[in-house]
Image (cartoon, rainbow, N blue to C red; front, side):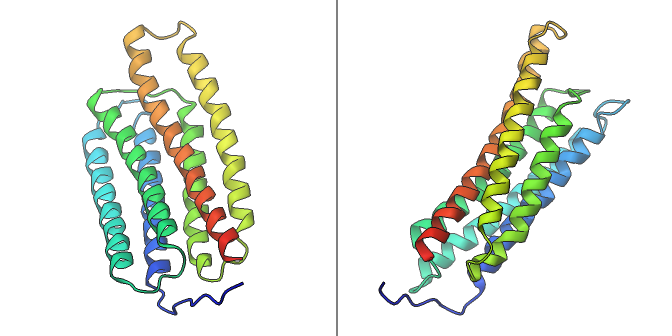
Length: 210
């Protein structure tokens, strides 16, 4: 195997950790949104949507910082294409979460299906695991447990998504409400799937660097 120079500069690892921490913030805001639906409706949906927009902008800035760094660095800690891909995958998660919150606000949804709480719990766990894992990219050690657990959580998310869709089409809701709820549910499912893409990219990086 050819010798690979690995820079000591921790900037990339710090930026990926920062990006993952934005996802922790995003999943927390999602939980706040769900909490605001209990009993009195989404009286604070505007404020929560604004918080999520700010979190999404902060995540974008971190993504831009990663791209600028890789474009100005001669020797990167791992393949440039993998750096781009990981940055993009992390950014996708935040984008889907922000779209879900914005849809709740724009649709003026006063209550959400209770089962959405399970989707948000999955997203919160995925976000926390990702934030804990990003610093370990520096050593490339103990990463397998991450993508295994993310895959398990993604399967859980799929099952929850199917149950919610079945409930939406049970006749309990009118057609317009079904369309609105389904938009939000599908965006949360897309965020869950995007986390699996992050884990797949981490696995690819680990395999190449082993």
